[in-house]
Amino acid sequence: MKVISGIMVLLFVGSASAKTAVFSEGPKELKVVITEDMAKRELEADSLRKAGKFDEAVEAYRELIELYRDDPNLGPEVRLSLELHYTSKIASCYREKGDYTRALEQYKKILVAGEQIGSRDVVLSALLWMGKLALSLGRYDGVLEEFEGRRDELPGELALLLGDIYRRAGMVQQARRVYLDILQDRLGPRQDGKVVLGCYGVPPEQREILEKKVLEETFDLESGLRKLAEGGNFQAQLLLGELAWERGEYRKALEEFQKAWEISPQDPMLGLQVARTFIELEEDQKALEVLSEVGPLLESPGELLELATAYQLAGAWQETSQTLRRLTLKHPESPEAKEAYLRLQIMERLGR
Image (cartoon, rainbow, N blue to C red; front, side):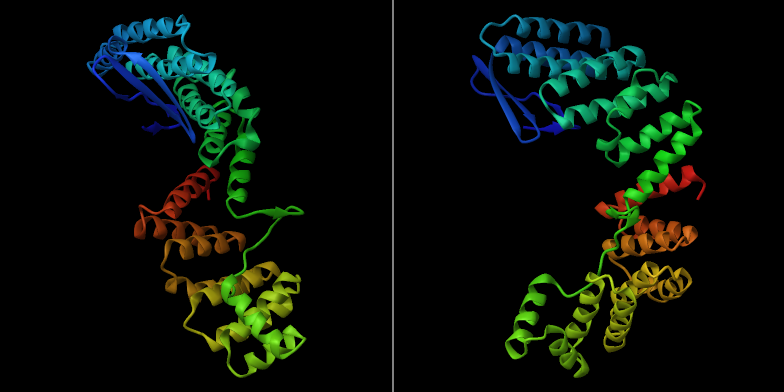
């Protein structure tokens, strides 16, 4: 069983006289028993495609669609899934042949079929190829409308593609708006038009233990934490900062986080949290001073992405770019590197 870009892939298992076609689409799986002859015809069509005989392969796939379409033993869902499977292969033939117009027609059919079976993966895969082909052809009618109708559902890669279509179509302002929206979306959730910053704090399970311990000795959590913090308890001091942050008392949170950083100066994530708090207080220059101090000490993919985000929120685009590139060089295979590549592409398009 395989899935490639959300399009169903056919595998054959079973006896010599019958085969089982296994279709996997996300968490959903369809198994259809087919004859050995049908399995052989599919393999022959695949061989024609691999040999570059695209017209013959297309014809072979179409014959298979017709055969399955007329099979009374198959239910509507199975017939539609099989048609989707072979249509995707026809689209690939046209694409590999360089006949982008016909390839685009096939991906439009796949888009419709994906919506009929309720598969987001199939819809997004079809949109991806439709967008790429529209850019290759320089024709955007129909494709642009499909993207616009799903604007709020598009993942980063497809939203970037929408921006590129706008730009190539001469719709510069719309393209810029899309690029800015994507970049803002990468920073985190928003409330009242403002990015909600994350907070570095005591891990939840350790926080629960600490709070329980303090409340066993006193009814007032903060006074109990304060007593522990004054005795040099790092977690108690950090939690005091968290509590102030959660209440939206950012000036108070800043004081608490700075004290925590004094207790544990070897922890650069504390410095990053101090910088975040300065950003929340709209004191970007102070934030940048802290970031320049702790930035070289941050090493993991997650830490570097957080650092880049902080630089971006502070309006330091050069440092943002440098940090994202540092991430892609040090951790090229990480999920965070993929995110960094996307942000760099958007920044390039925005001239930043």
